[in-house]
Image (cartoon, rainbow, N blue to C red):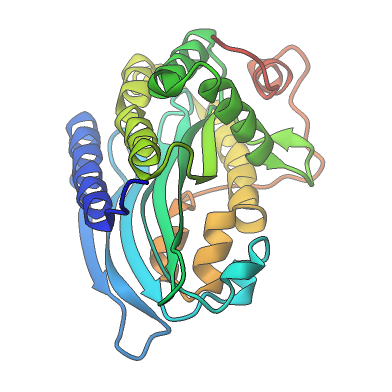
Length: 305
């Protein structure tokens, strides 16, 4: 069994954050504000992080890319409901999480996350896993973009066996689903959690591959759609659909709930919220419209590749 190398995970995650921020800055022309933070000595959690946010940019209305590395002496019961054997154990959790809310409604919102968790206790075997993935939330559907996104997701999984992409795609379709709305958040991508297959080295390699494939998956879509004309109608639809994004993150997302329940840093956890969103009562798009096409054709799990 390969040894756990948390230092290597930390090094990779910090470099990934820098690489993604540099690429997004090059597209937008704006700079990320950097907020380095460390948990207070009397906090239930210890550790550090770096939250980087680009606001009110030419291309990205808000883009947040956060690294965190926190540990605690006891994992709270509320954060380990599905793993009762971990309650009360010391733990360390680190990861990079990002959400990008573009200005142009024809450019989709994107989310990605890669993370590592280990619970350790003297005299006991460490319990560890990797998790992560990326998913796409368009406001207007384009087959070309959906095929490209999922082809990149498939390529990220290819070195690990032909079975991995279908499994992680299905996992993503099931996870990013608003149960109270009975609709997907977007067109999916990849999602995995509690991943230990093949041991530490193989699992770490999968996490790295997912992290490394985010920019090739997303940047070509941004470049293809960033100059598409739009008006008030498209902007209103974008804000309405962003409301669904907020609902998912606050009601269903396990990462958000874990961060808040375990005493995480609220500002960094909630950086995923869009700067503007809207809700309407009992709204339905006009039949035959591009907005209706998004709901009828794209917000349905399907095999895009």
